[in-house]
Figure 1 (cartoon, rainbow, N blue to C red):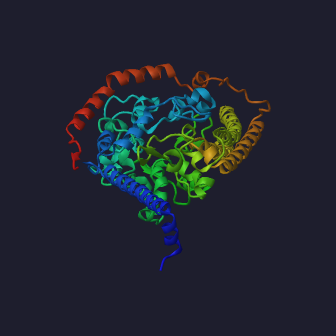
Figure 2: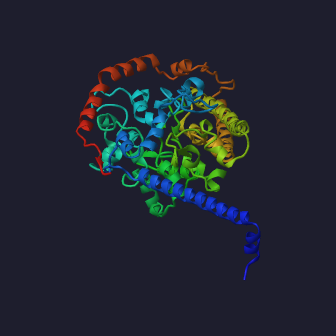
Figure 3: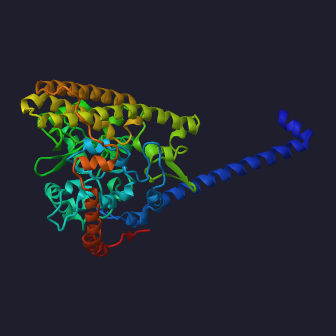
Amino acid sequence: MKTPLSEKIAKRPWIGWALFIGTMAIVFVLGLLAASIVQRRTEANILNTPRYEIAEFEPRNEAWGMAFPREYQTYAQMSDTNFRSKYGGSAFRDLLEEDPRLVILFAGYAFSKDFNQARGHIYAVSDVHNTLRTGTPVDENDGPMTSSCWTCKSPDVARVMSKMDPADFYKSKWSSMLSEIVNPIGCANCHNPKDMTLRLFQLPLKEAYQRKGKDLTASSLNEMRTLVCAQCHVEYYFKGESKYVTFPWDKGLNMEDIEKYYDEYDFADWIHPLSKTPIIKAQHPDFELFQHSIHYQRGVSCADCHMPYVTEGSQKITDHKVQSPLNNMEASCMVCHKQSKEELIRNVYDRQDRVTQQKILLEDILVKAHIEAKYAWEHGATSEMMQPVLKLIRQAQWRWDFVAASHGASFHAPIESLRIVADGISKASEARLELSRVLAKLGHLDSVPMPDISTKEKAQAYVGIDLKKLRAEKEEWKKTKLPKWLEMAKERENAMPLPKRIM
């Protein structure tokens, strides 16, 4: 019995030939597609399989680059320092020159000498060599800093800690590690050398979670894409005489939780020489403020925006040029947001402008409060009279710095940032009101004279910093002392075996 189709083909043979040719064409296309998929999967397996065996504590980023050349190639692009956004970027920026009020707020602390815009991870070690904050130690037992300052600068830290007690590392002099810590933040800080999976290498984060009873090993991949950044982009302090690096998260991660932790511990980073206020120096509480971000609440990780996926040939890899998304909008923001690049940048700057405007207002009030407090001390104020003033200045400066020190707070969490800054403005204003009462009791009813701090040089001269002398000493140290330690490091690394080829 013939079917309708066979009858049609019998009457019109060309229909049969057309069906045959069409079927063959579909089979051919499907074959090509299947071959392409197999080829790409094979290529992916080959490329993602390390060709070299990397040691557990291998700190050299170049050695990791032998096993993972594509990722290393993008990492190396962090040497580019040309990008400058309205408030950040990778280009060099002297923050004290841009805002001389910072010199007064950090008076008595090393940041009043030298404070520049953070550049890419690849400069983590050289920038520490260059800054005036680390001084000019003459030997391994000299200098103003301890090795706690190295903690987030290099994968060499974990390598050294594998051979000595962390407590002994932290309390040793910064200068004693100049020949040991030479590789900038890189591959080993975030990756397992066996298979490139993410790992948490930094001890302070692990210890903070242990104290909170949380299991980091249960973290999802998406959580890990933020937690690896939280190893360093957090608030921390150097605890006790041993300067043990500690995250103050025991009471929570909000600004008030951390302040309560510090207050109960009676902690201060330094005593401000003008107002005599015990000040807490916020480090860079990025992870803490990011949790108030709409992006975080929608499940976006740090890496999604700062290290987006890119296509390299037939492969999708993570871009290891860690940078501002504003310099890579197409691969970061515009993957999810359909607005134009110009509109998205305007949205970012709108938020940053509003937070910055209020932050500067708080700085103005705080600077005056420090100078007025100095005036009060000089005119007979007692500790009892000044106690409530100093408490308010401490609270106001903590609020200012919690936002100011965070790299992306004004965009990540503009609502929380404005809340904190507004609270700081209130505290600083209360401090000035209280100071006016103190001065009135001492018989001073006129305004306190304000120094000219319109430039970095004038502000540093006011607080007694001889910048020219400090710079000359640093340049001499870099020429005569630093090369000795770097040569020792070079000899040590030359004796280290290169990764073993396994494919």
